[in-house]
Image (cartoon, rainbow, N blue to C red; front, side):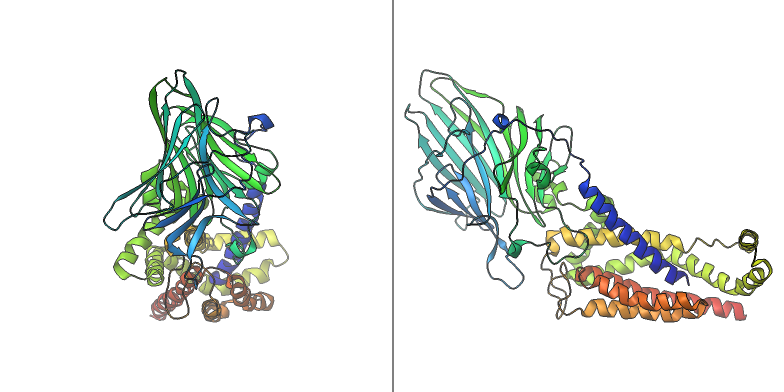
Length: 533
């Protein structure tokens, strides 16, 4: 009977969690304020002019527009667009109904970019194609602009072999007799409405991954910022040293990390009816007459790989958003990765983790079934109390509690295992939905992607069957016919509920049910033998 009660508790807790998530999404947690329009730094007009150079190392390819020097397209060569595609995943792009750009430049009194300028500076390059050679570790791409006063601006992109962080440097050669004053900025600009073909959340039921902006400052290690708040002009505007700004989506992110110890302004802005932006602008930088100055920043364009992101900037790895149960998801992922290195299959690693979790919680499970067994043997005495005090509910409850105390039984001991199991279940959900290593992770046969739903719904059906078996094993403890009918429906309800869940999560729950069946048979058989003796 305790197992059936656990199903009710599990369902209640999960639905309550979904409602809590929906409420939290409506609650404003971020540091924001309305910014006057003239304080929006880089509302750069849509660039109609195109003059691309093409850059490629072994993990990423870029299309850089020489008008402004912005990265307007970026493809991740190690990741496929979808499970059955041969095309690489395109993170940054430009098309008629969606743009996602990494913009950067120099603003201020002697800068090249300004909110009032309709045409970006047209840089020049020595060639159209830049390719990292096989034995090289670094690829440097300089583009140059010379203004009418003879000041030379060199913008340089530096890519490393096997890495997703790009160094963006600005060399300013001041050949004049005047002091130059300028500021460096980096901005991530994206169309707010995601096309349906790219909406990775469209097929997921219940919880969804975050898509929006984020930042890290001297006061906040990691803070998310929703597009909806930017559209409502509830904009971010803070000044900070260090930190970074980013655009996030499931499995992938883009981030600007300013260099140097100077103070930077972090901001968001609603650029027009479709585009939003998050960016940073440095404090004023001075270049003395007849001298050279170099200022730089780092741009991350790639998958959310924890150790690589942590090496690029402090707290950048927090963009791998495991939700409020990160303290469980993180060690679960570390253990899963360790098992994967040994086994070489993410699905079997999930199965091993299930056995480990159930082994660790076995003492609680045993205590639960022991309590259930004692309750079963006390049932005749409880029935007598019900007959004796049936008209006095309060007295009957008191007598039953005294009986539990006399027999040393805790009627609430059956709740503890499910309260432990629920956070583990949700932690695994977040991990499957956020860890890029599990994207398109193959298991066996028809399961080609553990992070998405079972295409043939076989695992959810098998999971429902295991729930039905558990119910049949415990049905002799249910005397109430209405309760029994409800419990007969629970496997069907849960099966429908799990149809859209990631197959890795369904696999975990199915194996957990199989372990429950084995443990229940083992523990009850030992208790029955003991009682017979």
